[in-house]
Length: 238
Image (tube, rainbow, N blue to C red; front, side, top):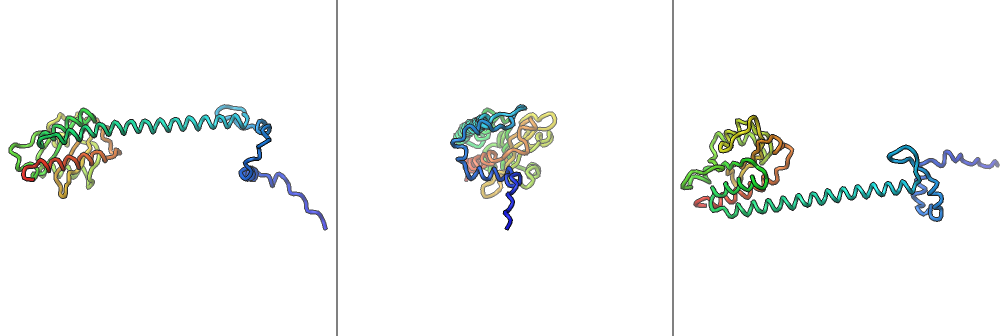
């Protein structure tokens, strides 16, 4: 009976086989540190080769720098969130202190301008919120009529809130108390609802990129929810 021929090492010791074997024997290099010094790898940034240990040092340094960058991003996000919280807190407290709906509108416009760089604000209120007031609403509050309501609904396009460009013509119609931009601006628009439609809140800027369409509208919706509840509370007979 003939003896079986030994397998060709070039066929049995493929890189994948070596990698699998080393993965199953992580202690292989214990006591063979000299072998680690002999292993050479391509330098990740320049031509030439470096030892495995040097490559490991470079990889660890790169990971450390990546972890440091991610930590800085987290800290920056935390600082931004804290700043946003403080500004929102001051805004809400100022709204709560407003004695009537006109004071509420003025506090809203002032706080948003000073703390959030919002150039203009408009509150279009349903007639049910203004009919019993002794005096007509003062800007930035306006009584919602059919023309304004139709246009605002068209700008929302079936959504509860959105950010978008605002043409000069729309600005003149919907924010008549503030000088319009030369061509177009941008706005964050949200519907005021509390069991029933009660109007619209508009935050506007002359900068077409200030309220980009890609921006989240969570803050605007939250602000609208607060404002509509305060308006209802301050409406005579409610």
